[in-house]
Amino acid sequence: MNRERSAFTLIELLVVVAIIALLIAILVPTLNGAREQAKKVVCLANLSNLGKSFAQYSAEDDKEHAVPVSRSIRNLTLSRLEQLFVSWFAWGGRNGQVPFQMTSFSGLLIDDDTIWSARHRPLNRYIYGTYNDDEANDMPAFACPSDTGYPKIVGGATPIVDDSPDTMRGVPLYDSVGNSYRGSFISTGSSGFMFTMGALGHRLSTLQNAAELMVVGEPLFFNMLGTNGQLSNDDRELVEMVGWHKRVMTDNLLFADGSARSTQAVQDVLAQAADYPDVDPTRLFWFVRGPGWRLDCYPTPGALVRGGAAGVTQMQGAADKWPKRNFQNLMRGPGNSLSRTGHRGR
Image (cartoon, rainbow, N blue to C red; front, side):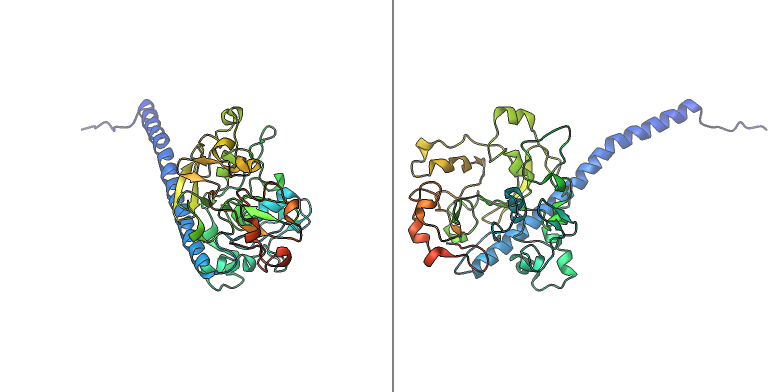
């Protein structure tokens, strides 16, 4: 008896291929989303551990400063952008692995004679204790798994993302400056005096709004707030930024109470001078706040984190108003010279 052999027709084969392609198209975004969700969890765990380390540092340091820690590099021959870019990240992290290109400097940030190497970043020993040279090149506690650096400029200028030298855009921050997480360091002053308006230089016990006060976080959050923390309506329409974890206007942040959470860069109404008569009116633009978060430590007075030989009259703004309230009581010693670690606390 002859039996006919069954086989797929071409149409049936094409239908099967189309079904497989459709399933892949449906599943891949889901799998990518699950993968990114896992990276977000790792990132939040990193920030939570950093919060514990900041608390340990604050508990140990009983005289000069608390959390977070960053050395001042304003005395170096760097442009303002370069100074800020490096100092925001130099409170902790590994040796740089990718040459850092700046106007006046080009090379790896590992020289022990500079403030950028791992051994000079104060928080490292609270995360890793003692470590050798090899370990100083790999400190995953400071690495966000989704770190892609500051975005590259495409099709012209991007005025909102103004915090990175153009030469370093698109380079993971963990590779270039050794740390994925930027500190929320805002300050005011001149002629050698620098007062903080955030957590820098304070003891944790002095902060009255620790659960809302940002300490460090993924850096694009600060750009989501716009230039100097302010977005105009035009800017808001122009820039609906996506963070490292593929979420619009949302990034992971660490707060002064040690909590870490995903946070939306949605702002409340900007502060008005009439509502805060005890605040230096030239500093109101730093009152950038949203639901459950803020950049400023008000009403806690600012901390003097850098001193010089200049007098009160040479400072910007009013010395009797926040953040420089009780300025004379914050002075320590003749000229209030820099401490060995680069700044003073309260």
